[in-house]
Structures are given as C-alpha cells and as structure tokens.
Image (cartoon, rainbow, N blue to C red):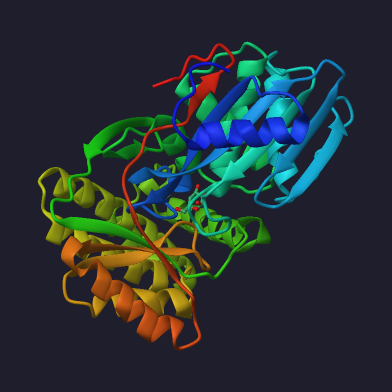
Length: 400
Ligand code: GLA
C-alpha cells in the first residue's frame, strides 16, 4: 500500500488489519466523535444545534470478500463476529455489529454493498460518554463499505444513511445532529445546523486564550435504554397540548414563549418544563452562535451555564455526578461556563476555561470529584476537527 507515511492512526489500523486477516485492507475510513457546544435535545424538535467534530475518532479498515461472508473485528472490545451476508437478522439493541450489518443492509438497498468483507474497527471515542461513538462507527463503516462497492456518497447522503442505521438497526430514536456534524464538520469551526430545513452554516471557533475542555464523568448511559425515548415522547405530548391552544404550530421549534405561557396551565408541570427547555434552548443556540462569531466568550460561557440549569431543572437529564462536575468547574477562577453535553443521564461535561487555568480545573476535579469517590473523571482539551473521510485507499492515494 503505497502513499502511507508517518505513524498515522490510519497506518496503524492498516497494519493491525493485515496481522489479523493475513491480507492488506483496500480502504481505511475515519469518522470523528462530536461534542455539542449547545442545543441539547432540540434536534428532534426541529431546532438549532451547534456541535463540533472531534479529533478523537473511529477508524475502519476494510477489504472485500467474494464468498458472501462478513467478518468484523472491534479492537477495542476484543470481539470478532462472522455472519453470512444473506442471513443477518437485524435485532434491536446497541450491540455494535447491528451498526455494521445495518449499514450494509441500507447500502444494499441503494445498490452499493460489497458481496462480503473483512472489517476492522479501532476507536478512541469513549463509548457511552455522550460523544457520539455510535455515529462515528456508522459513518466510518458506511464510507468504507460504500467505497468497496464503488459507491460515492455526498456528505448529506452519508449522514442520512448513518442516521437511518441508528434508528432502524440500533433502535435509538435519535435526531440528526450526530451524523450530520460527523459528515459535514470543518476544522476550526462549529456547525450551526438547522434541523428543520436541514441547512447549515459554519461558525468559526476562535477561543483566543481559552480551552474547551471535555470532562468525562465516567458515568455511562445507553440511549437505547429508554430514558431518551421517554423525553422524545414527552416533547411530543407537550406539542399536542400546545396545538390545542395554537393549531398552526407544527413543532416545538415554532412555539413562542407567549404561546407556551398560554398553554402551560393545560399541561402537567413536567410537560411544561420539557417544552420550556426546548423553547429556551433554541433561543440560546441563536445567542451562542452570535456571541461566538463576535468573539464574546463571556456571553458564550453564560449561555453554557444557562443551558445546564435548564437541562438539570426542566429537562431533567442530568445526574448528581454531572451537576457536581459543573459546580466544581464553576468554582474555579477563569472558568467562563460549563454544562452537560450530549443526551445526558451521565456522559460528559464541557468547560470553557482560560488556557492558563486548565491545570487548576484539573486539580479541583481531582480533589473534589475523584477523591470524593465519584471519579476518576478524564479531562481532554478538544479542538474542532474535520468531517468523516477516506484516509487512504489501495491506490495509495492519501486523501486530504
Ligand atoms: C443524542 C442523540 C442526538 C441528540 C442528543 C441530545 O446524542 O443522538 O440526536 O438528540 O442526544 O441533544
């Protein structure tokens, strides 16, 4: 395989593939994890979101087989699965082979699946941490297998196929944010995605002397477990009540605070609170995008804090551990804001902090979270990375 240089993750996974299967891969694809800066639980309410793609990513190496057999290995989980392409029965649940097989079935529907394949997965995106490890796996697998079958997908087609795989085969009724940012992101920018029109813009992420730190609480969640679906259901129920007051409203995106106030008395306090979060959060995304583009980091930090309070008190997807991390971060001088990111019920917190204070943040978390027996929490400073891509193929053409 010519054209490979250095010790890139792509080269490492290609070598592992050869060791495992006894022949070289034909293609290696990469797809990023993501962190959502703001706009939580609004993508499935037609709202606006502002995520970035991460350098932390999933690599998938693949080669075709002509015997109708699929073999997939996850290096991280140390597991191998083999199945016949004609016999895989989709089962609901988040078992990782469901993502691979699901993507294959969807590609086959579009006339673009290989007849069989060997596939190896490696990833440094924490699983179940709210950083979209599953979207990264779907996107990288889709790119690699489509490439084997000679199918070239435009970024939006890639995002839609990966999203469908998650819903149909992993059984998670998620919104479009994770797959879209993984397919469309640009280095150095956040993606301002309008989930109603499915159009987007890029907002430069210029943090001057600040770091964006992701703190992994170590608390794991499974979105397929039901809490996520329950929140979606509650949003739908709140919308139905609001439509009694204003029949023109088609989604929570279209609800104004005045309409919400008028409808609130017809709902349970819990449903009113869920709707209040969504309506307020969409407004916060608008303000946050404006603040970022004007370089108003203090304002941006305040909006992170307001988003967290709303997720904690109104949408109720936080946990005591996550709240603790946000509180600890808030007590460190030089922190501009912190909040839960991702679907919730555990996972990660993001913190905007002066770069010179990152070590104080680390020390405070170690002292007050880890030593209190809640951790260990893991901190990583993150940057806005690029979208999913083919890292290289058999011709040795290393993609940009
Ligand atoms: C998960 C889902 C996304 C989104 C977030 C919450 O990550 O996959 O579609 O709903 O939760 O903002």
